[in-house]
Amino acid sequence: MRKVAVAGVGLVKVSEHWGKPIGALFADAALQAMKDAGTDGVDGLYVSNMSGALMQEQLSMGALMADAIAKPGLSAVRVEAGSASGGVAFHEAVKAVASGYSDCVLVAGVEKMSDVLPEVVTKSLVMEEEQEYSAYTGVTKPGLSAMLHRLYLDLYAEPSEVGMMAVQSHENAVGCKHAQYPFRMSIERAMDSPMEADPIHMMECAGVGDGAAAIVLVPADTEGVEVAATTVATDYCSLPMREDPLTLGAVKTAAEKAYKLAAVKPGDIDLVEVQDDFTINGVLSLESLGLVEPGKAAKYVAEGGSARDGELPTNTFGGLKARGNPLGATGVYQIAEVALQLRGAAGDHQVEDANVGLAQNMGGLGSTCAVTILRRLGR
Image (cartoon, rainbow, N blue to C red; front, side, top):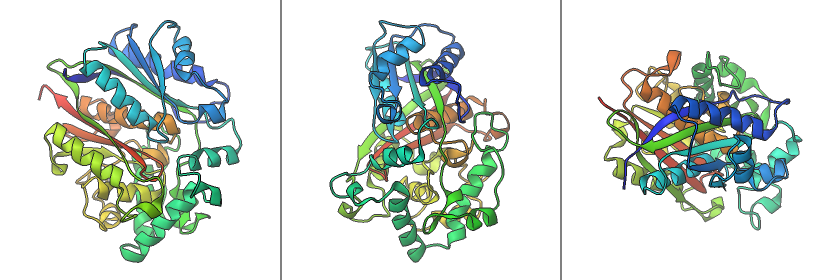
């Protein structure tokens, strides 16, 4: 198997792009990535999209997005794995280059969420969960996350400690050109905001936005950013089926496999992008990745351990909470942001001496997880 490298990235600002159809958003990111890679030709396209069939009533996303970048005839496929679609699409694209089947692959995620009513977004999110025994009750994704949040508070932390996950993400988003909400937020503002699903406050939740992100992959050389590992794992979709609801089994399994493939330990990770669509999910992700001990991540974040200048810089461009969470595109944003850090191209967001970075993209409440580890070459 060949080593694979990130040759180019393209990021569209997460926002409400009322004037752009989904294909135009995709093309913006894809063409940026190809220009960054110094190529106008790719031999494969992996489109990460979660909800186009519901929100745009559109299938055939692979062909549609190949058309959007004026490349009819290109081998193209849509990848869907809930909110983990981006990470899983990247995983499949890496395999295509590593196997030698393809030499230059474009993987790009896109989601257009602002054109639909809020109830459509809510329906889309809960469609990640098991329908016959969970979603039919009327529970929402915030409602399910609130159960985990309440249990964590009862066992381990104060509400403000968990809430600091959102505060830290907003701090990191300041000055980020592709972030949806690049402003600071105090813990008081977060804790005083209305309840989304008790005990989760509105300002502990990612918003709704449109976005697209793209990455070009090629065989690795002696310099650049190498894909050290990419793994995917699954878990029970229904929370009651899990032995410990506060352990994200898919995250833990994918992470352990990734560390082994990359020949690194959790302590070797210089920075991490985690799924903080709700603050509790970010906290549990840090623990299930093996980066912080179980029950201690909220305090770790509150004490500054995850700050950009802390021991483990986390969500260095704002994460899902502040950079934005355009569902199927989110995982590609995460991986692209890690690549920018390892290139030394993160600008004011740069983490000093960053050589190894990890991105964790999660579908549902941990039913699917993709973990990507990137490594800086030539050092």
